[in-house]
Amino acid sequence: METSLTIAEVAERTGLTAHTLRYYERIGLIAAVSRAPGGQRRYASADMDLLDFLLRLRETGMSIQGMQAFVRLRSQGDASVGERREMLERHLAEVQAKVAALQQSMQALSLKIEHYRKVEKTNERPPLSGKARKGKTSDDEHTTTTARPGSGRQPALRAWPGQAS
Image (cartoon, rainbow, N blue to C red):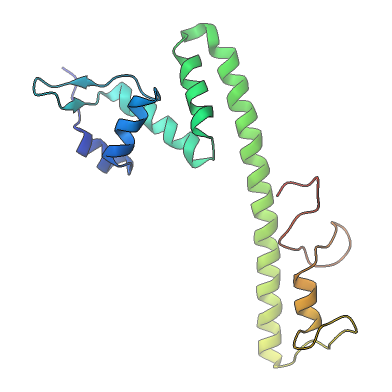
């Protein structure tokens, strides 16, 4: 016989609250959970498998509506395998674009941190440019602008329009 878990046990294992688990059931992300004779929810391993995957989708930024669409397709069985694959491929491409943008931002942050370490080490401030406002260094001005890729300047924290952000 398969072991079942209470809502408290599932909440502890997944990090979701009992309220969120009941909400997921109410909006159809998970099928109606079986009940013990006293009416308490009992989650089976199949429920846990789906919850684990839904958590991955949520963690990667898929909306509730997207997850609902995935679950609706999943309920159609093998007939929707192609649609589910395509949906997940689109989502993966979005996740990969976000990761690439985060990596670019991490690089910009790392370069800026290294720059400030050098400034601190030499105890010198970069010279003021003609464009720098009073109280700001040319470095501060640079921080608020965005360099185009290949311009030789440090990457900024914002992307140009049309780039992943």
